[in-house]
Length: 85
Image (cartoon, rainbow, N blue to C red; front, top):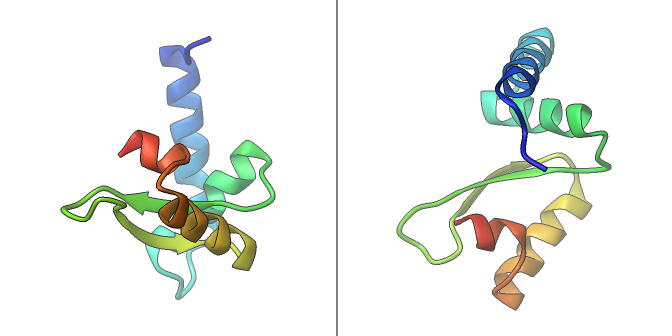
């Protein structure tokens, strides 16, 4: 089931609000990562961006487990980030 336009706008508004509310000395990517985790009620999250490398570049993660899961995708060559990139 897809996400409707209204749902996307609501999610984006929550993401922006949470990122702004957590504005400290943390980088924007870290704040967005934590906001995404809160919105999805996940235990952890990480942000990977596509680039010239086959696996992309991980910008941040919320914790050590998320970091390990991101690294595991690189080792296995599959996973949600790999599918998206």
